[in-house]
Image (tube, rainbow, N blue to C red; front, side):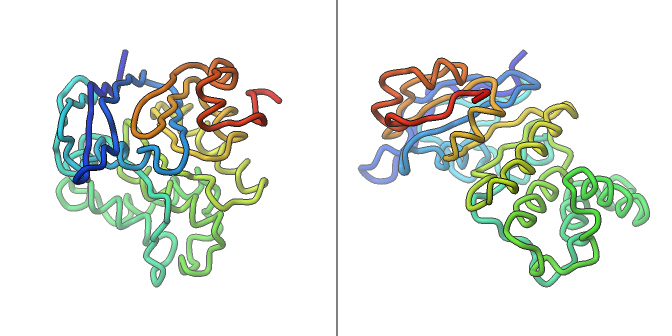
Length: 248
């Protein structure tokens, strides 16, 4: 069963066609990857799906309901949440409080959640992403890799059905990349569907069941990591001669 269906979505900015008639489906419980050169339209597509841009054409369905043009805060309450390529935690707040903000924004007083319950839930999420031992530190004290995981923790605090990760491994060391990949896998194992934009091929080829490739706003390929890694049009447009195949 599909949790997300994108049908013929187009987004333009003046004379620039950033996303050009893109269609794809994401099944519940999978990790779906989106790759492509800089300027291919990946983040614009994310912004359209997550409600930050309204598409000029096309329709979007989430969990069986049309969500085309709905605002981000409404989508978050429905269970569609995203992270950002450039992480922006509340630097002057403790790590725990950063997660509590997300919990209170989507749960809080409306559901009658007590402070004790919210703190317990925030601690569970921090433990899940490997940051429980950092809970009392100010977010500004975290290194870049841990800020990336805090970004994921804040998104998980909204209890998503679909988590969209925008370059979660960007700027990370190989060890930090492995930590983020482990978190993404465990998110999926917990029952949450994951969509990932990522430039690092070692990451994308090792965690995704299926991958879609964009170039100049247009979908040029979709398939398994093995299929994508041997697709001539993808190699020409993006991968070049050297690329990673899952398992290598």
